[in-house]
Length: 433
Image (tube, rainbow, N blue to C red):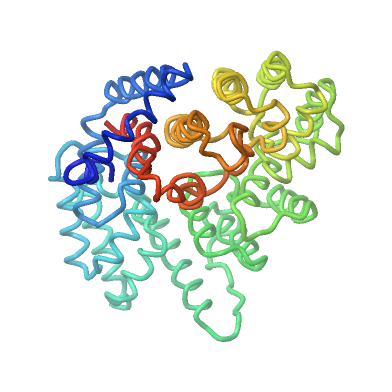
């Protein structure tokens, strides 16, 4: 957006407003930090397989019309440096009746399919499923595999057929006006496939959505392969009040299933020795089950870092109860963000305590760009409250659209928007270069 504005009649306005950035730079050393931070990030990104990732992002955007943000997210799961293999996969799917919309959905959920061997791996599976007893229609095949594309990653023919039939039954039952209970396939008792389907049926009856059900069905996790232990773990998690419709339920079930009572007690003891009550730990667990994953050394080091930064134990307890994820962040990340917000920007430490989720925000994409705008406005006395900092929550927790409305677009009459947009986008431009 800045570059579009830069060329043309607005160039004169930009030159007149240039003092805004210069004044902010002279007054605040934080801008040097911003430039250094962005340069380091860009250099690191370039050395980390940037070529393949760039090609993958471009391919996903051009072939499927994905947004750059979605394409970048997918490129973290799979990358490729030429289009031969993904093109062959797309050609195969289209030859079997998949629409462009269905293929886009499949790639979003299971992008690894783009690097599968179309001829040796995917084609035989599609042919097998489509010709099973002559009963599978093209529309049925495409609907089922769009709902659960990871089925195509299953190697064994028997498991492929069993899971395909199960997904088909669930989809058909859910289309019925009357909720149907499904019976497990006639597989030998104790068989892994039978156990998995029985357990997933139990989750379905609790109201777990198809997306989570099918993901667990096609995973290699032992979680849904057992019998008595699964039932016991499921009862515990339901009793804790987790909603079966959420991924948090799955994560809690996974942890309860994987831990013995002794292991769980040991994890709680770690937090108790560091000043947390049992109630504190379970409150945090219900918000973020992964809090019980960490070792005593990890938790201890994390707490010591928070204390070294000036947080009290009571404040840390409050932060963990509000946003338990913060205990798992690296010491380097917590220190960098806290020192930036408190020392560079001058927000009080209690502001971070009140909204600890800010420690999970990206320096490059959110914290630095937004704080740059605030510093520039303060340097010119253009904030409504003079030179006083606005609330941390309004600066960092709001959406981009709301932030721009609050701090950028309101200055249209002062011809400052081009410079403020430049400041806002600077971190992102450097990060994506």
